[in-house]
Length: 200
Image (cartoon, rainbow, N blue to C red; front, side):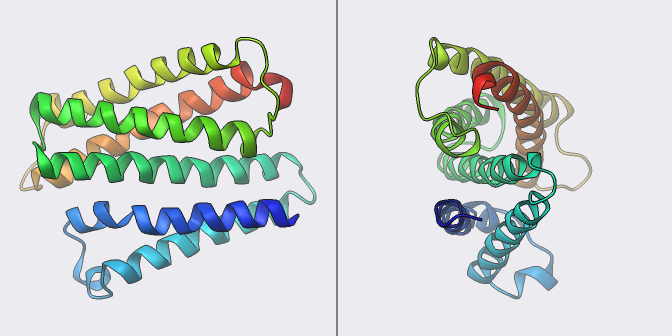
């Protein structure tokens, strides 16, 4: 493993640890986890992400694709944490359901996509030179991913709505997670097979 990748993985993990705090603070954690404190939970989460990256790098010695999957995974977690951090700050400031929450989800997704472009371009796919129409292709894939993300959130968060006695903010985060998973799956395939194909 080279020093550059190790440094970037460490930086990404540190950012993850910091930015996961707004989401942790907004969720009613089980007592067994909550007793550790928000900061401790954030540190453990960041360390687990970093260990997952190291595991992928280790397997990558025999299966090269795992090195790229390891980078994509840590960037995916980082993007998810960015998405959720912005989302939770906005729903705390405005609304956790309805059109206000839809707008918050849209804004958080856009911020995460901008973050995603730079991390995936220069680290995951190591596409250091700009290919023709690369940014346009990235925007097209991301806009479709944006639509899928927000649509999934809307269906889970607003059409289905909180089930049973689930707290509205917890349900909003569950809907956001569903949207994020759908968006991440679409984006990985689009970035790998379409945007950064020459570098994959």
